[in-house]
Amino acid sequence: MYSVGSSRFEVLETGKIVVAGQREYLAGSGVQTDVCVARMVAMTGCSLADAWAMASTNPAQFLNVEIGGLVPGAVADFVLFDHDPQAGAIRIRRTITRGETRFES
Image (cartoon, rainbow, N blue to C red; front, side, top):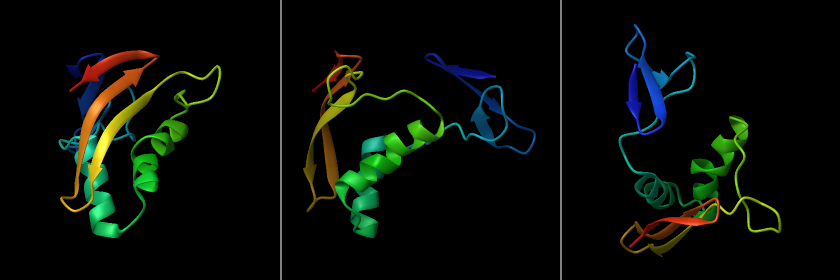
């Protein structure tokens, strides 16, 4: 069993790294999400909105995790960023979770 922050992970006998307490949900990636999103857009031509959904809202809905939205009464979770499609890069400016700034560059 391994911990990173409040997250716990297990390495199964097959070598698969999963979220602790079950055997199916993979533990994650060694590449930061903004890099994955930028690569998805650059490599597939999908929209930036679709790539962000693939990395955030879709997995949260699958795992039944409450996510925020920009509507009255919703949890205020969002990311402010710059996207440079020519460079295939995203620069995170600010991350806000539960209405509080958690990261700012």
